[in-house]
Structures are given as C-alpha cells and as structure tokens.
Image 1 (cartoon, one colour):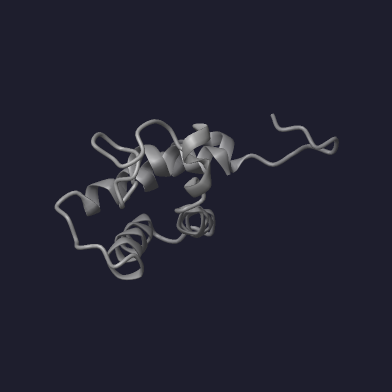
Image 2 (cartoon, helix red, strand yellow; image 1 turned 135 degrees about the vertical axis):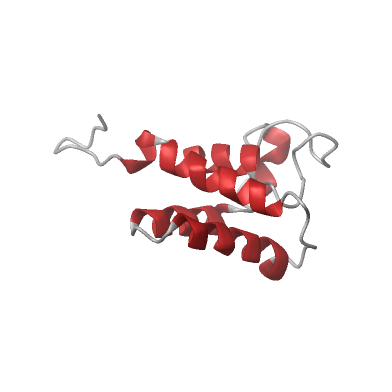
Amino acid sequence: MSRLRDIGWASWDPMGLLGPGGLHPGKWDDDANLPFADEYDSYLVSAASQLRRNVPREQVVDYLVQAETQDMCLPKTPTAQTRAEAVVAAILADRKLWTWPDEQGRFG
C-alpha cells in the first residue's frame, strides 16, 4: 500500500493536500499527515487492480479522472488527465507492485 500511496500522492493528489501550496505540506507518511494518508487508497487500489486485470490503460485513466470529477465532486482541471496518466504509467512501471511472495513469504 505504501508504494501506491507514494505514487498517488506524488503524481495525482486531486485535492491538492500535499503539493506546493497544499494545505498540509510534506509527504503522506509525515506524522501530521497520517490522519488522511488513506484518502486516495480505494481509488489507487482499484486502478492497480484494473491494470493487473489488463484493463486498457486509457480506461483506467478515465476511471481516475471520473473519480476526481464525479466521486470527489472536484471541477475538471487542465491537469486532471495528465495526472491520471502519470499515475497509470507509474503503477505499470513499478515492478515491485507486480511481485508475488515465494514459499517462505519473501519477495524477490
């Protein structure tokens, strides 16, 4: 989950909570930010799960934009599509998200 949070908070953060000029500067895992660190978890898990099931990346990008504009009721910004594309690309590029434990529960 922490890897997905790293991706989501760095690349997406549709509410602008942590970014430059955000309400809570720093990183999601800073002590002051832990109360809302899980804010985007369900969306990030869903996006990663969709990609794992080979849902086309464009469809997952659309899902994230829709989550931002409909579920969170935020206005569609000029960066919404680009940020969603960055999340999808980062999830796909992170090989450690796609590993499975061996018989002893260790990850390679």
